Length: 151
Image (tube, rainbow, N blue to C red; front, side, top):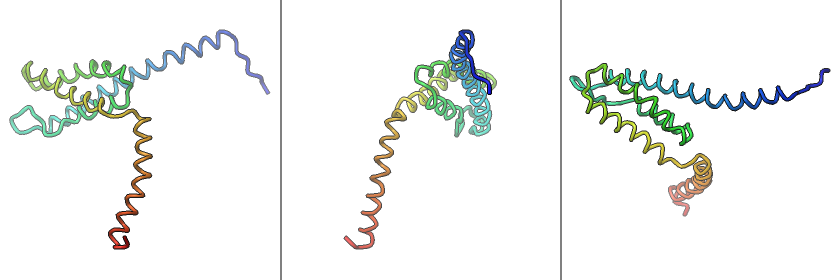
């Protein structure tokens, strides 16, 4: 059997690698969100009202919301800043006026940010869900008893 031996260079390399990986992961996730935003915008353009620039459903807002829900709040600005040129590119392809691009951009991004900001943290939500699931069994039993006329 061989014994594992680490020297100072190995430890320095490990600590540097751990420091770089979150930045690479963030960059890849931002690029993935931008690609999804663009593909969602193409899908949304096919759902437009005839002779209008307004879509019935706009998937990029949902994609951006999902990204914000999964990301840390301190990195939200990166996602928003990266998605803005994608949004502008899609709108310029349709010859939307500048005021229309800006109003749609602010509206869509505002919806995503407000919806993401309203969600409780995962720890609070999981505790609340556990409490609700425990209570729901009790409520279900009570309603079943009342429906049967047993109470």
